Image (cartoon, rainbow, N blue to C red; front, side, top):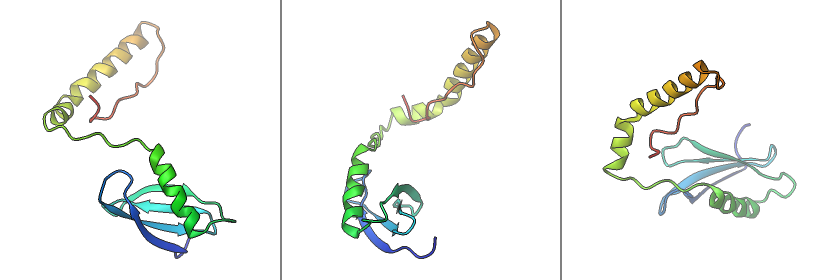
Length: 117
């Protein structure tokens, strides 16, 4: 896509006090926000006809408000969730296999993320 039309720093919607880099390409109508680790966090659509810097800045907080905030780190629960995740996944797959064997329908089970309680 070439060089971006706009480059700026915006407040990180997932963390307080941090700022992230945003690159905007007006011609294809895309804005990319990179996280604090310089990896692509989100890609947003921008209207090309009215794609001014002010409108892009107004769109980012609105889309960030709809994003789910990160869960706080619990020093006891989080490591335990990761420790017992293989057993939890095995139980879910065993239940899915048992359901398939008894004629309840064969589907690949949806595993929750390891950080989910």
